[in-house]
Length: 505
Image (cartoon, rainbow, N blue to C red; front, top):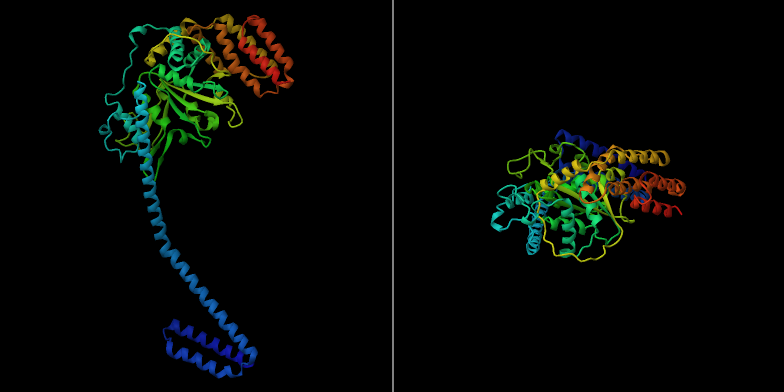
């Protein structure tokens, strides 16, 4: 064992000397390695069993240290030299794959639009967003907005003008309501009550957002679809997905890899509306599968602005000359001829629509299927948006809410505040003053319009209250309606109050 430790001491001294010579440039590979061999021969004969065991362990340790150093060097070389090249190659490969997939998606969308175009042309309608001939599209490979450029190509002469048919040159609101109801019955086999049609048209006269609620299968989506067919400009149906969280899901986004804008059907629809002077419906189908106040927040804010010229959305930060024609510095003005219609199912798979959304919209509730009836065959009614808006404006002038009714409604407001701690708010009062005259203009009554608004705007908020403790207050509310408006008035509100009382049992 003593010989082994003397050998170890000599070996370490020799190794230190060789390392020093290596840095001084005097290392002799032949002579220095011979020196190690001579030291081994000089001491190995007296190692004994224990010395040889330690010698083997020393050799294994040295091999392990050398192997670790070599592995570390190889790892550093690969990380510093090889990996950057591999990463760069992978990014390039990924970029080409994304470009290929986007091209396939673009081709698939074009093919889908052509199929939709064939279906629409068979029905006598217009093809949404597709050129009539392949040669008219031009080269869109470098366009950032290929679908919107297709819309530009579809309307080479600019905004198209719409004229009323000869048999409806002076048609009024009741005539439009009656004609739509007969059209839906005779051509679409959809059966709506006269009051439902009045509510929908009056809602169009009071705002740009309409929510259709109710159980599945009651014709919520069919109503705006039929309305689009009636005005001969089919509704654009956009299916809301549960994953929608912000405006990019609705409008699309700029893809940094492909240098193209990922365009949505919703964006195409609002852009195409800038080329039309008739009425455009954009349907957000199953709108409460995601939180409306998240993905639709920008539009909720825009539609609050009194100046229509401020209804602008920003789409791209660096505008180019080859962007769509109706862009202004990367911005798009939302047309006043657009109506947004959202359909909503009330079940466990959906989110609750908040007051922020309800207060900015008019809503219709569908709780049963329409009852079939007979109607004469009725043609569609292409109509300029300005003509319908002028009818609504004239209705607001001709049928303002009487001061007596406003005073009674103010008393009702005070009663609700006192007993239920709920207030109407200025926004709702403004909607009342727009909706009720339009409802009267469509053939309804002033009290009937107030009844409808009170039900969908005020009593709707009662659903979040603990009505189990408010049965007496609800009974008093019905008595207050009788005192103010009469026993036979406000039937819709009375029905809602009784439904709330049943919920409390």
